[in-house]
Length: 170
Image 1 (spheres, helix red, strand yellow):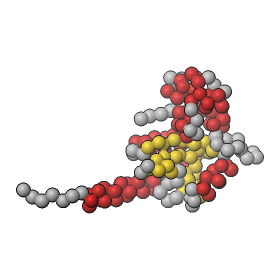
Image 2 (image 1 turned 60 degrees about the vertical axis):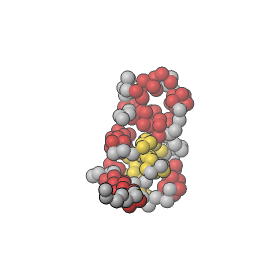
Image 3 (image 1 turned 120 degrees about the horizontal axis):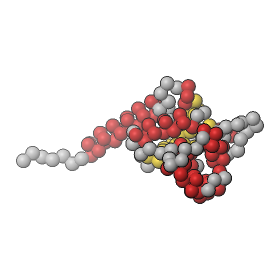
Image 4 (image 1 turned 90 degrees about the vertical axis):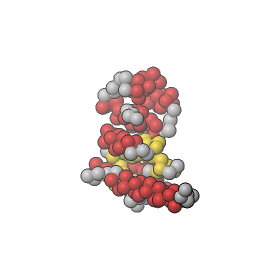
């Protein structure tokens, strides 16, 4: 499933399309066209949308929000990677590219959340993360998370096989 950056941003804020369009100052039809990829917004328009949808409020001097990726794993919602870090991206397109990797790897409910600094700090404390890591500074920002999920899946498979009833031969 491939989504547009605009759709990922809106889904990350959990706003329905009509409320998000109102907040951004667009008609619901225009926002839907952006989300479906029928119309490509300019980079400036995507930044405008990200700023309007960002959680929290900007701190002094802050011009753009940062972007983090949320995902579901084993029925729970997460925001931190396998090492307990919250990955933060300056660029919504890089965040979107990484989110698509998670979708391709089978993660559920993957979304990009635009967030201002104060809200990120509160989130890091709330999820008891070890801190923030700048995704664009890492060679492979999701490597730890994908490896962690792989280990969990392997452990679950081993558990399932151990619990399966043993059949006796004919």
